[in-house]
Image (cartoon, rainbow, N blue to C red; front, top):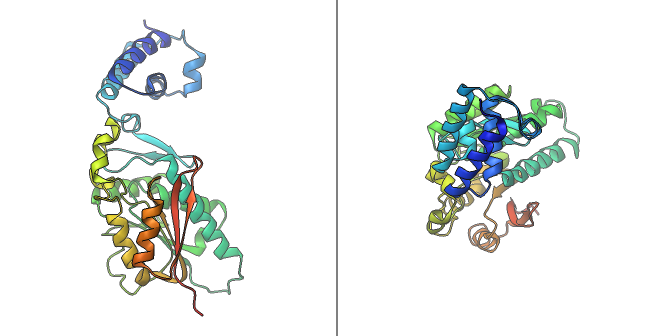
Length: 302
């Protein structure tokens, strides 16, 4: 019977030969998923025997990874903001850099709920997550606000143009016990029938990869929905469409938070200046020091 170390040694060699940039990590994570234990246990028990059935399932996982399939899709799960999200080819895999979008959105909501006393009977803050994909942003925000006992003071709606993505997002919302607190809709940016509705906070992680850069992305991204990545020739086509709709969509004093590519700060600032004169825009950086989230607010009344 093969041991953990036997299986890892062969798998690492295969993944290295296939071009994986993290062959050991991939192999350890996938074996842990098959055995139902975490990576620490894998590392700590190299001589533990592995049954034939588990070895066969691990070999199948390694074959999928050799073909370039993302580890998250093979596992069927991705961690985001300390939460486990179900993931598959219906939606983009949540990225660590998007956690900043949730962090900033949470801070905006907390400020609005605590900085100024809200009279009894005040309507809930209206929060919109545009391009929700797996639901990671809306759900992580809902869970964070529940921990703060603020979930009853907000209304959260999330949209995506893909019905498949919305189905996955609903599944994840139920798994995190916010299925009745986040409303998901298939829509082109804004929910249907809300031409006169306004939002206190709009958070968006829309496609922002330049079309000609898609072919240079890691092979794993070819397994993800292209529409969730392709932002057009300049990477800002979809984001630009949302910018055009902000004046009618944001409430007075509202704020929009838009995730962007690390090389798009100058272009995004120019787009806001052109499409939204007199609006304020600042770009927040991620932990790597790269421009990541644009904070956009309308002009304040005189």
